[in-house]
Image 1: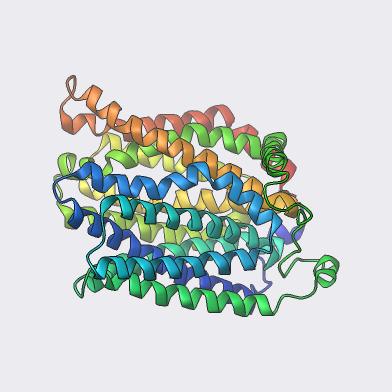
Image 2 (image 1 turned 135 degrees about the vertical axis):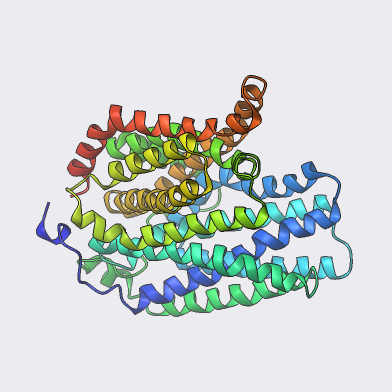
Length: 436
């Protein structure tokens, strides 16, 4: 490893990155408002049917399972800034249509589910393009810092600004949050257009030592549906044939499944085991969010401070021990502290592995590889969420409900620590061998 990667990088991220960050911040602010406005609208349409309300959220998540891989092909085929501008422009149009539908009283659960699916599909395209475009804006040694700023900004925009703001503007009318989202996305589009206008020519990009602009689409020779299957297979093979990426995907199968069992029963744990109400639940989530922000900002420093290649394993081991503490000592101060620290470690692991993936994947494959990894992580999360309810329900007749709700935390801890013990040394070795 060179000295440049062993010290905190000094190269500035640059104005183009911060304009890109601003676009991401505005887009995430819109997402945060939607996280409150859409469920609230659904609950007003079906106040006595939790299943119908949940179905709207489910339809919004389905595109991540079924469209992530095709979106990766799209990201690798078309100019990425064009795709992001187009995705957010279409979302603006959809928010306007939904505002009209709600204003005139035409909304229904089936129609809302259709809108949620459309928003989800566009979100898949936008988010995949964002993760793939970072490498064209900053030097490789600044990826941890850039990704940390993007992830931290997303938390601030969604959790601390978007959700409370969504609740406030709902008081003005059910359709008002959707009008606000149009404004937020307009800011995002303008910022993206500003970045795109500074993109050098393809020849300049190819000649640069550190990529600082949008690369030309390398698979642009194919169009329409021609070759989509081959492109999809090429992206999946690129992930599976790369030893480090394959190891991370396998780890994600186990860790993400276990982690989702905890997320699906988390609100019940807070209510029944800790005895907290909605305000307490919100404060615990805020602790986790603040921890995530701190972790996102510290990833670059931790990468240089820790022995080379150990950051991902340190984050895994630390989070595993913290969730074990929650399972063993389910009292509010312990849980709040664990949520804060684990929030930073979980985000730190995500930023570290995303940055490594961006560095070691050829640019013309990066969109599909990112999409393939997201398919694994989101797919296993869906499985884990279903298993979480089954696990608690099956243990409740044997244990008390209070104790049964501790089981997902114990499961997460056991799975993570087992992964660290069995694969930690190998994962560190693979990072050292591949991230050079």
